[in-house]
Structures are given as structure tokens and as C-alpha cells.
Amino acid sequence: MSQITDPAPVGAFPRLDWVDDALIPALRAAVEALPAAERLVARYHRGWCEADGTPRPVVTGGGKAVRPALTLLSAAAVGASPSAAVPGAVAVELVHDFTLLHDDVIDGDELRRHRPAAWSLFGTPAAVLTGDALLVAALRALTDASAGRATAVQELVGALLELVEGQSRDVAFEQTYDVSVADYLAMATGKTGALIGCACALGGVLGGAEPDRVAGLREFGRRLGVAFQCADDVLGIWGRSARSGKPVGADLAARKKSLPVVAALAAPGAAAGRLRDLYRAPGPLGEDGIALARRLVEEAGGRQAAEEEAHRQWAAALRALARARPTADAYRQLHDIAWAMTHRES
Image 1: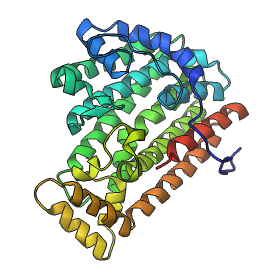
Image 2: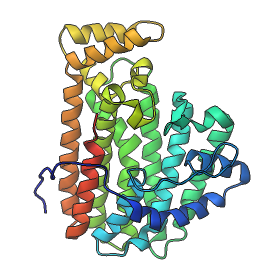
Image 3: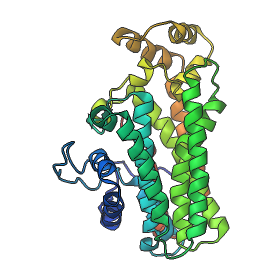
Image 4: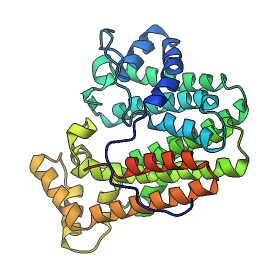
């Protein structure tokens, strides 16, 4: 079980319809309990309705339910019924939506999942307040757990504190040029790794697992989250907007310190030097500037460095998962999800 091997040829993201079946009724109940104004924004953000409240067909499966899937599978991994972890799955999904709503406001991103971002339609105050409401709903969801409620709340609160610190680091990076790879990894651990680690740990906690098994699940999720962020940074520069739902190159246009950029800026050579000059130049980057930055990042080795770091973190995640002593079937499913999250097509 501890041996790390690549799976058979990769196809689509593992189907997660079974997760939707377990999650959606409880998630809808949590959203419907919000005040009317925030409920509309939350339902729009999730793709359940149009901006005027007109219902939309709900698309299930795919990778959208990945965090709840990790929670439910982590409960199964320690021998519990996944149903015991549904409150945790709802909580992490609500927190994830909270972070996305606030991220779009902070970054000024106008697209989310191929649609106008909530703030661009409803306004910044409505998006921020909806995020706040979802955070409260997430904590309330954990009160529905049949056992382990206090420990689960502590787990989520700890992850939230790390998440805020990670987001703060990410914003601060925009105002400084000297960001190291170590700085980036600390940021990614908080911004992305903390919540995914919490998702896995909550499955163990609500499944009644011993602390050492919960710790293995938590570390699996944290490492997986960092690997996912590294891979996502690569897609943000060399991916396709048709897959991401956001314009490719937006991070470069904003001069964000994603991992390929951080690694490239720290590299020796002419390409890295030109990239440093480009990142320090005043004014926005147009299409030509984005294309030049993309080429310089790759020439300076930024893409290769990010891809290699993603693989290192993925391998560390699987080693941590083995320490949780998961059941064989849950290990296989968690392995497949981890692979799909970190080896998406560019």
C-alpha cells in the first residue's frame, strides 16, 4: 500500500456522482437556510440558478465535488460509513465557496466556472456578505454531526486560520519582488493545503479514527493541496480557458507570483533577467507582454520546476496516506482522485 506507482493511462476525472447523492441534499438545506439575499448569490455561485433566480439544470459528477469526496472517502478509509462524515463534507464545500467568492473580489476576476463572477453581477458587498454567511453555515453544519463535533469544529477553525494567513501571504507577494520557492510553498500550504487537509482530517474525526490516523489523513490532504496548487499554477499560464473557466494568462497580466514565475525569477541566466525586468516595469501587461512573459518563464525553467514540485508533493501525499492505514478500496479511490487533481491536461 505504501508503494507509489503511476496508475493506468488517465482518462476523465473520476466520476463523483455518488458524492453528489450524499452531499447535495444536505448542502442545499444549508444554503436554503441562509437569508434571502445571500441565498440567491450562493445559489447563483454554485450554478443552481441564474442571476434572477431562474433554476438551472444541475450538472453532477466531474471534479467539482472533490473536497467532499475526500471527506467521505477518508471516513471510509478508517472503516466508518461515509454518511457519518456528511456534515464535514458540507462544511468544507461551504468554506470552499466562501473562499472563491472572496478570492474573486480580491483578484478582480470577472469569470468563475465559465460565468460572470458573483461580485460582477451582484456587487462586491453582496459577494463578501454571502461569503461570510457561508462561513457561518459551515460551522453550523458541523453541529449536525452525530459524534466528534467539538474536535471537528476545532479542526475547521485551525484550517481557517491557516487559510487566512495563506491568503494574506498571497496578497503580500504582489507588493514584493523577493519571493522564494520556500515562501511560495508556505503560502500554498495555507491557501490551498489547509482546507484540503481539513477535508481529509474531518473524515477521520467524524469516522471515529485514532489521532495518528487522522494526522496521516490531514498530511495527505495538505500535501495534495500544495501539489494541486502547483499544477494549477502551471495551467494558469499554459492551460486552456475552456477547461479552467478563467482567462489563461490572467496571473501573468496581474504579475502574480505563481510557482513557475517564482522559480523562474530566482533562476540564473538571461531569460530570468529579462523576466525580472518585465515584472518590475510599470503599467499593465498587454497580450504581447503576456506572451513574452510566458516564454521567458519557460526558458528560465519555471514550468519544469513547478511540475517537478507538484510531483514531489503528490508523492509525499501518498506516503502520508499510507501512514493513515486506509482500507484498500478507499486507498485506491483516494489515489485516483489525487492523481486526477495533480495531473490534469494542460
